[in-house]
Structures are given as structure tokens and as C-alpha cells.
Amino acid sequence: AKGRGRNGYQFYAPSMTGDGVDRLRVEAMLRRSIEKNEIFLNFQPQVEIDTGRLIGVEALVRWQSPELGLVPPIRFISMAEDTGFINQLGKWVLHESCRQMVRWEQAGLVVPKIAVNLSVKQFERGSIVSMVSAILAETGLAAERLQLEVTESVIMNTGDALVFINDLHAIGAGLAIDDFGTGYSSLAYLKQLPVQTLKIDRSFIKDISTDVNDEAITIAIIQLGKSLNLSVIAEGVETAEQAEFLLRNGCNLAQGYFFGKPVLPGELLARWIGGGQK
Ligand code: C2E
Ligand code: CA
Ligand code: CA
Ligand code: CA
Image (cartoon, rainbow, N blue to C red; front, side, top):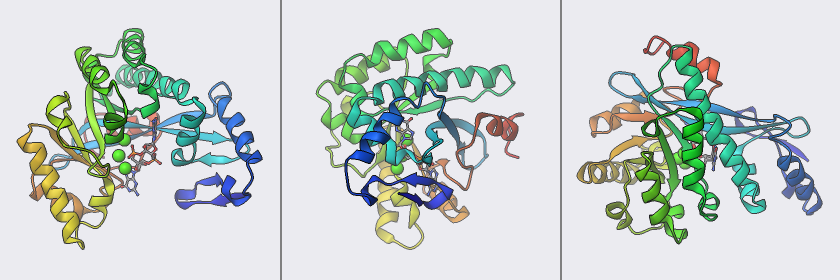
């Protein structure tokens, strides 16, 4: 049962067959995906809207399966979380991300920061801080250049989130709240946690020019970030109008197809070497 998704993704949809056998097969394939070199990363630019300057990239994982085609992360991340494979996968992503920063630098491109997504499951084992510091030490990447992205659910559902996040801060890594505004959570954590960045969820940006509620929420998040001295970045910016709206309302950082899609390391290098937008 294969379906063709948006973005040319061809993905396997176990729900189409309805039984659990396919799921087990897919889980088994996923478990071997790293050793079979089927996992790779794309990197999406994060830019300063007014100058077009590259301020960072976000690492986004991809699974190219010979049997299933290119499987989108929304399909395999939750499976990896259910099976526990996420710990191995998350570690691989972080390691590869840090190594890539060093490789770009050797090729003449200094990417100021790399953002890496962390799953809630990676916090449940308690070893996240030692894993991060070991990878930083091994790759030689300065901790300040690593930004870890977590959703509000990580903060609300992880018993020791406060401890882990403070430890990550202590080693110098930055923290961004991903998909900000979509989770249900108290805002109180914002004053307790060493958070540097709020990422406005794409769902708010999408209808900015037509939906007054989305505009109001976006403006409120920008103001909240300002008041708390946090940087605010908008995700999913696809049009010049959206970028202008953000700039006009005090948000100068953005990520989205308008500025660049997630691409392979070589493509990012080709586009950004020399520091400017081409
Ligand atoms: P996310 O962290 O919110 O990442 C942003 C997603 O929005 C990415 O989808 C990106 O390709 C997409 N995107 C960026 N700009 C635009 C735009 O202008 N328009 C539209 N329509 N989409 C845009 P992707 O790569 O499919 O990843 C989906 C989700 O999978 C991520 O959402 C994240 O939650 C998860 N994910 C991806 N890589 C990793 C990873 O290494 N570890 C973990 N734990 N989760 C990951
Ligand atoms: Ca993210
Ligand atoms: Ca996000
Ligand atoms: Ca999102």
C-alpha cells in the first residue's frame, strides 16, 4: 500500500491495509535504517528578514527506504518514539548535525547556529545531557552554536525537564520552544526555564493575511517574546507578504520556503558561501 503524498513524498501507509503486520515490517526496516545508510539530513536556512543574512539552519531528518520510498518524518518519528528507536536516531541526528557544521566551516561557510529537534522520549532516559556534551566534545563544535528545539509537550510531560534543560543550558547549548502556541501549557515555565527562542508555529503564519485571529496571535507571541527578552522566529514563511507582516510587527527572524527549502549540505553550501543570499 503505497500512496503519493504532497512534496513528491512516496510513503507507506499501514492504515491502508488495516492490519498490524505491515507495521511490524516497517518497524523492522526502520530499526535497520541507520546501519543501511538510509537516514540522512536536510538543512533549512533561518534568516534575518531585513538583510537576508543566514543566522542558522535547522536539521530535518529523512528516511530514504528502498522499499518504501522517501518516508516523511511525520510518519516515522512517532513510530521511532513508540519502539524506542528514537534514542538511537536522535543521537545520530545530533552527531551528524554537529559534524556537518564542522565540515561546512572547513569548506568556507560558517553557519552561525544549528537547530536540532529533540523528542520527548529522549528526555525520558535521563542521559540526554551527557549525550549532548559527548557529541560536542567529539566534534569540537562550540555548545553556543547548538540550539535544541523542544515542543511545549516536552516541558509539560517530562518530570525532570527543568533539571535536564538547566543542565543543557549549563553546558552552553541554547533552547528553542518549537511550534510555540500550539501545545496546551502554562506560560509560567517561560520564566523558570533558560529558553532563548520562541518559534511561532506555521499554522499561525499560514493564514496571516486572511485570518485576523492568526494575525493577533502572531503579534501577541512577538510581543511576549520581546517582553521576556527572547528571540522570536517565525516558521513556515512562504510569501513576501508574510515576511513583510512579520518585519512590520517586530519579528525579524524567519524560516520557510520563501527563504529556502530544506536541502542537502552541498546545496546549502553552494547557496550561502560568501555569506550572502544568491
Ligand atoms: P518541525 O520541527 O516543526 O519542522 C518544520 C517542518 O516544516 C519541516 O517538515 C519543514 O520541512 C517544514 N517547512 C519548513 N518551511 C516550510 C514552509 O514554508 N511551508 C511548509 N508547508 N512547510 C515548511 P519536515 O521536515 O517534514 O518535518 C516534520 C516534523 O518532523 C518536524 O516539524 C519535527 O517535528 C519532526 N522532525 C524532523 N526532523 C526531526 C528530528 O531529527 N528529530 C525529531 N525528534 N523530530 C524531527
Ligand atoms: Ca523544529
Ligand atoms: Ca516547528
Ligand atoms: Ca510545526
